[in-house]
Image 1: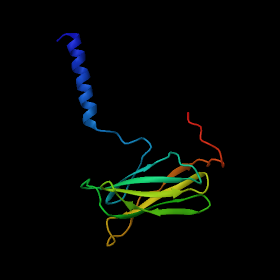
Image 2: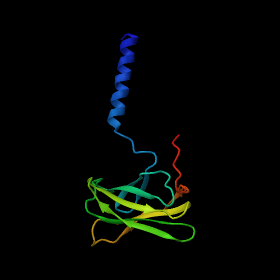
Image 3: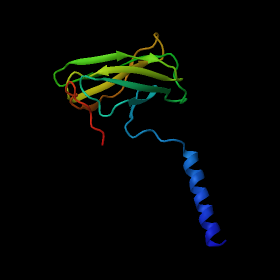
Image 4: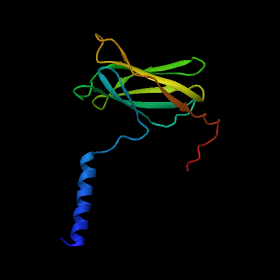
Length: 148
């Protein structure tokens, strides 16, 4: 095999390998697990700002079967160092196995976050391990964010 054909074969193999792996989860997504569920938590702004709504998309799968959980019940919550807690219940859809929640952090700083979930109302809520989220200071009135 000549070097040109060899190089072309290697490029094709690399392209096939990367395509077969599928899209990677964004590096800003948070992962969580309970006994029965696997979660991927995506915030629309990372890190969030205080005094602004942050929308979360939570994808839930059965831990064993890896199938999406449809019409479950859950909530996302956060607590700051002053022990102030905020929470929002999940709204299902429209994507299969996907839920949405919105939080408004009142202050900047570090917040402990977690979520609870159950497949239906006959099951107990299962809680993930908490994780820490740094919240940036909100913009002053009339101030605009400078994009890099």
